Length: 118
Length: 106
Image 1 (cartoon, rainbow over the protein chains, first blue to last red):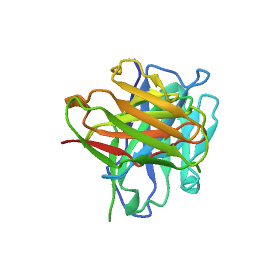
Image 2: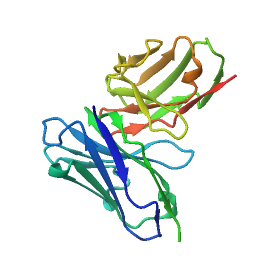
Image 3: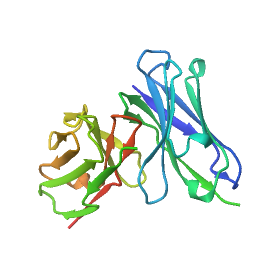
Image 4: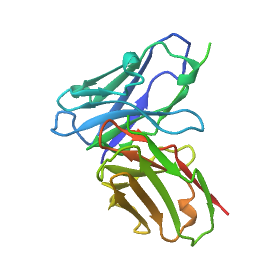
């Protein structure tokens, strides 16, 4: 059974760096073909893909946010970490992590709401 | 970037109705398309992948079709639990989502 759960701060100040952790079970990020991605959703708006990382440490980023994002993995802890620099109120959103198979997100975490406000 | 455009943005329907949602890609994506259902306050749920393959556990009243640039999601007989927002997502290159279609009670 695959499960994922996001954790991190619920409130960050403008210009700060956000660090989110995705802790998962039911699969290993050392298995060929496996990946984990991050997606966000501002309140009342559509989904936006942010970044993904594969078992072989191949990393991909949304072109519009690439300069602000870093994704890493800790295979021994079954965790994937996303950092986003220079946070702004427009970055207020629910952030999801998800298991990815052939660029399709087949298992999702419950999401975590991050508010950017001074 | 490959842009995904869904229509309509919302649809009002009754239980038992047939509902069709369309998704158009700004360039050809073969069959690299997925559909998700999202209920308020919940994470999206994968319904369809590879344009027409039903994810395990998803009711057969959901179906997908299309290839290239034009795709459809059909709910053959709308059930009370199907009132939700639906998103398409292209999986040809880095993922992009449509803007969503809200299925509301008529």
